Every structure is written in structure tokens, then in C-alpha cells.
Length: 92
Image 1 (cartoon, rainbow, N blue to C red):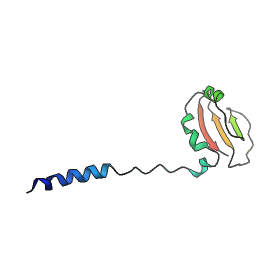
Image 2: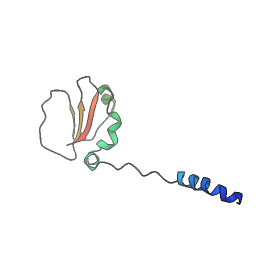
Image 3: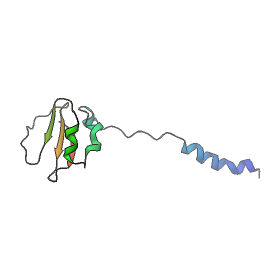
Image 4: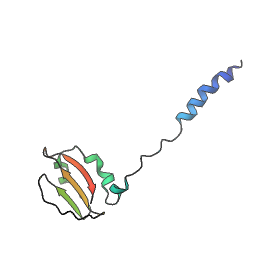
């Protein structure tokens, strides 16, 4: 058997490894207000929000806080947990 024939399976693996990884699809319910770009905030302490600016309209929702139930696809909601960490970042 030719030595180049032995190299073919290895070459196939190398080529397969070079294929681009498909991007994770963006959840359309998080894209309309920019929440998809802010998911890295989840789990961080709410104090990081003081150094940031957000598009209007934005609500920072503390535990037990009353909020309206109307839905606005362009409104950014940042939900704070009982331990003062950021629990969720959503549109609505």
C-alpha cells in the first residue's frame, strides 16, 4: 500500500477540523432590545450597572418591585435577584 494512502484519513480529519463552527443563533426575543448582547451580565453583582449606560427604555427590576405587565419589544429589563446579582436580562 502506498504511504500517501495511509495519510488520507489523517488529511480528512485535518480538513474537517478546519470547517467553521456555526454561530449560535440569536434568540429573536432578546434581540429586539439588545438583551442578547448583555447576557454576560447574568450572575454579576448589580453594582456593575452603575458604570454602564443603557438604551431607553430600560427597567432595572429589584425583588418585590411592582412592574407593569404591558409588553414592549424594545424595552430592556434587567432583573435583580434577592442576593443583588443580575438574574435575567430580557426584552419586554
